[in-house]
Length: 268
Length: 248
Image 1: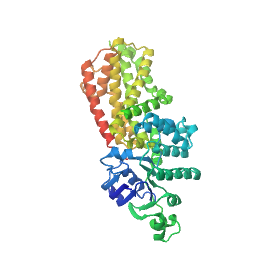
Image 2: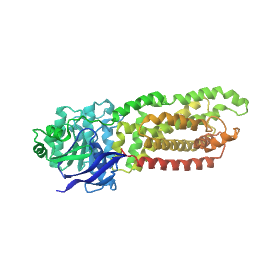
Image 3: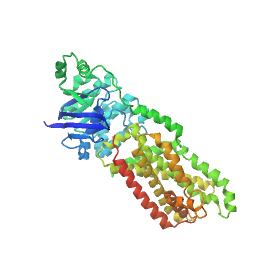
Image 4: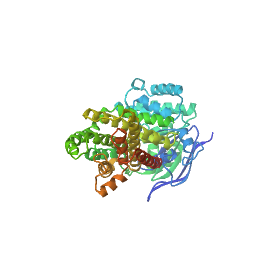
């Protein structure tokens, strides 16, 4: 079993601010890896670099044996991703979103239709598949995004806070399927979450990142032993402290600001 | 190719599904057509210019295309904010395919809006001189649409949010419209205005469209076509370059 993700000495600077500071970790093929950290610690920045949409300042990355900065197509073909914030087209139906994804990833028509049916069924959206995504609730959108990320049978699945806003039933359902995928089809899973009991339950290995640096990594039980904590949550707090973090304005905040500018000054 | 096709189709679907946008963006051209077309009509005729409505209509069609095209291109910002852009950027297709698909779709949408406005102009009294030249008119409509969608793509790729949008509309798009041959003939203008008009790509688009619909070129068919094609090619390349540099 090889290493699916290898990161060495990875750095990302935004001007003077160091978002990711010399981090290194590896994720074995077929394993589930939890990437944990407080808000603004550098989790999403790292995922962006792993998934080819952001160039690192320095350091090296191998995803499925390829370099995301140079062999983008090979890397992109290997993974599916559920982003932290929504990435569906609200003006299209659920089916159209799935279909568009399948076409972009070159999934042949017959297989595409079959897998769309199967995956939409799996996330419990079969009877809503012809509905516009704008009619979906937050949880339904999330489920659809998980289904979409799996459509092209990726070797790696990136999940950036995939279960945010989901009820416990759906969370359990999705995690048990992901665990099954990892076991039966040897899919590697890289996820971030704020639910520590979730990480404790599903991740074989975790890394804790804070202020751009990895402060600890290992199996959840190693982290608990090292910090003398009963739960992973206690271990997490022991490692990262009690201070509440500030994060830059997120997309929703920016969107609201923009909505005002739009209505105030737009030509149309 | 498949990516170009599906992303182009996406633009068309979104257009067809939002009647509010279709109708909403007809308001401005109709306002200009009626207010200016009928308002200045008699003066224009007295000055020996013939029918102002016939002169103005191609300009109004170009205007509708201009605004819709810039808007279509700039929709990249929307997609960035609402997240869909990410979905396309991590897909195993080249950025070039993505930007071509989007731009082509946007241009077709803008052209469709132009065609609707042309229909309205004809209801108002505009006459096409020769049906044979209509395909040529469509070519010019497409070039205008492609040029300005590419321009929107440049802005959509470079800007992070919609804050700069009014700035672009008021200091670039509106001047481009007013300092073109859309509203008045080039020939009898003061020298500096003539110079400004000749530097404006839209002038060639409007002139080509006006000529093809049968109402006399100020330059010539070849000049209009060559100038506009070259500029469109250049801007499409710049737009593609800017889009390929987007980082999330």
